Length: 421
Ligand code: AMP
Ligand code: MG
Image (cartoon, rainbow, N blue to C red; front, side):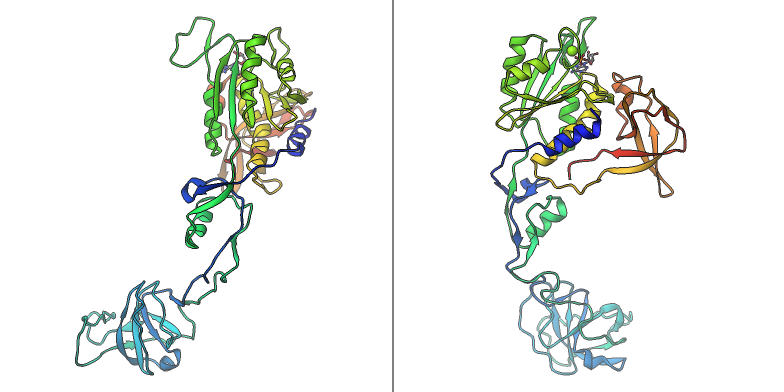
């Protein structure tokens, strides 16, 4: 099977309906909004000064310099009523409501306070000061509406400010906060279980025999999930390649939305994952893809909408298969609607990559920009098992099945791995 066809199967598989959950605003970060958020008030809710300056009638400053009486000063949040007669103005701070009698604000930089020797206006009258009114010289005219954010110009009361399906990044959460929401209804994130198979594996920190290796795949997957804003709902640990034990662990894993297995999917005598998955009710959707690394990768689904990926044990296969096959499913389960083609690009290879025909080669690369051009530095890993070198990759370039590689300077198709959203 072609890798892009396998991704098509992941994107096309029916997924179960989910019930939205309510989350406190900050806890809704990186999830998808399950409701439309509307604003009860106009935004801005009042005519708001966009600068520090003087609220004036534009008609009072058609010829400049013009000297106006300063009737007071208003800070943001101040609602003391103020009446302005012709020839009068109000000193006003950014964010304060522009009084009804004014229609523009002259920035403080365009004014001069006659009482000030510094030239710039410093016309804050002392609280309760009596006697001669303070004046200010307006040095440049302003059009009606200048430096005023008009009530309702950003959004009208009753309108939708965040549609259902919005990915809640910081900016979107701030919009919800800005309309006064402290909770949001979101789609729950998929629950992911991890299960690593192989008799050679020992958890980091444990005593490793000469022919054993440390289990790095659990940490790799937990880290990749975390990079995507997801967690591990159930860590099932290491399982030996043994039917009974494996079936028990797989059954527990399938209580989550997605079970990520590594190892045991190839053609070895102890590669039991595909048949044990079937025996646990997970029907194989695909098994074996013409991709390097990751050829034995498999995907299975249960009748009640739980999914399992059998990823080959080699750490680089896990990395590539996670971004290429698993992430598209996780995005769907999280109700994330990615625009088609996001993360796809054309990049210039900085060194030749050679391959033999027969399988697509998803060559690990590190991407960077150089004078506006996207460059792909191939990461020279010594095969699928070299996690030390492949760790620097942040994407792949796709070399087609029958090609024999690509040379330095060639433009090739690239997948840049990113976070969910
Ligand atoms: P398998 O797919 O089980 O045949 O494993 C392929 C290769 O990946 C073998 O060299 C394994 O030792 C290695 N491997 C399998 N699982 C892990 C793991 N959890 N962490 C690190 N290496 C692994
Ligand atoms: Mg194994």
